[in-house]
Length: 396
Image 1 (cartoon, one colour):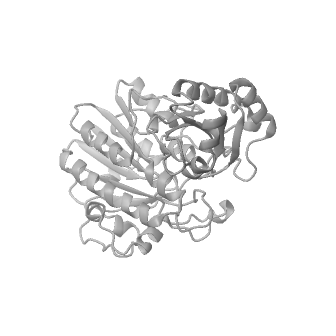
Image 2 (cartoon, helix red, strand yellow):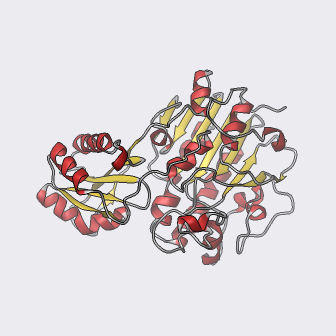
Image 3 (cartoon, one colour):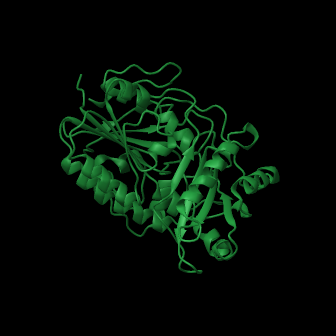
């Protein structure tokens, strides 16, 4: 069986490909992130995704199927009980989340939590509602700067986010307050998946801009993952983007923060020039954060086109000893109501220059086939309590 020296796993954050059978239970009916984006775009130029077989995998308006796709491609269903970032990523690495993380989208955070946060941080909280990160800055940033208050907000995901102006609410203090919030939200009744520091610059409406100094404080995975097993075996586990935050550093040997999804792809291309044995695990967050939650299908489509350019550059640099896997962690249909993630199937495309031919794979009932396949490739045993079976043989 062919074994690859390096595996490049890239998560196109939120690029779902159609509603799962249980999507109605999550409030999602008829959702299809990628399909509906393609319908809204006049044209979509994604030649590299196209030749890998993305349009063979999922019908995309204006993007033709190819006769001989390069990749092995299929559909993955989510086994875990959720549609959030951590549930999806943890499942890829073998952990099935049975109990969804708490969300406070409809009500904001409880008064008791806010009071404790204000007391511990020494700042008055404003906001405390579900909002877009850019919209809440336009609404409240001037007040924060003028009064020394602290903007706290949430989203459709299981997160508590704190904004801080880098000039008036310095980064060290912002991170301190987020660490306090992380401690408080470990309590079961307030438990969220992540606390996120959201620094920004600017002094008045129309000028506010979030910076790349975001920091996520995630709960630790509840068990050992494939990444832990690989690290223990002396293999590289390189994270790009928010992967390190999602796993709270567990199983990561080297981490790179990204300024954007385009930057994340540039970092991944650069890492392809590095000699290592193991996994490069990349998350491209802008699909979700900039376009999905803001319900902007055209912006989302253009982001996919920008990714496709970076994908082509990466493919040019990969060798016969490399395996590329493209997938997503959930959906976020920008044509659907609200601003929430959507419960969807996700794509799976696997390609190596050494593959003799591409073609369709059977649908899989969990994202965990990804981690199991990677573990199998490197001869690493799946940790106790993990799920997933390898499809390495099927990749050819």
